[in-house]
Amino acid sequence: MPDYSDNSTFSTASGKDYHYVVLQVTLKEKFLGTGSGNLTELEAAINAQAAKGYRLHTITTSNGGSKGLMGGDRIQATMVFEKIV
Image 1: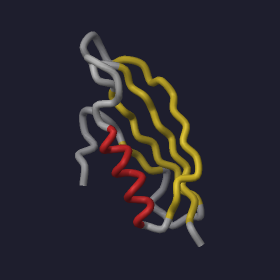
Image 2: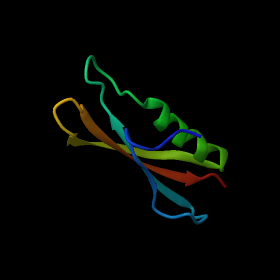
Image 3: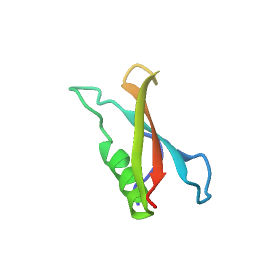
Image 4: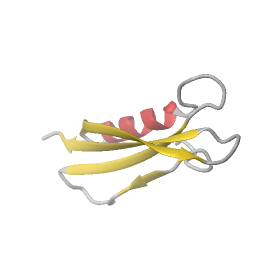
């Protein structure tokens, strides 16, 4: 399982078996170059829900700002998963 520590956060709205599940992953942009430094965490979150019988319904992103001089930007990906029945 990925380490959801310093570089990003991974939170669930509930631990219950609902028809819809909302997850949020905070991605840290690379300081040099473009793209996210931890896309594997986003991929892991999506695959974990797929293994539980959910499919990605909606994903939105928002800029979370920077965490300092050398920190790079933060992008929050909020995902809504729908139970496959």
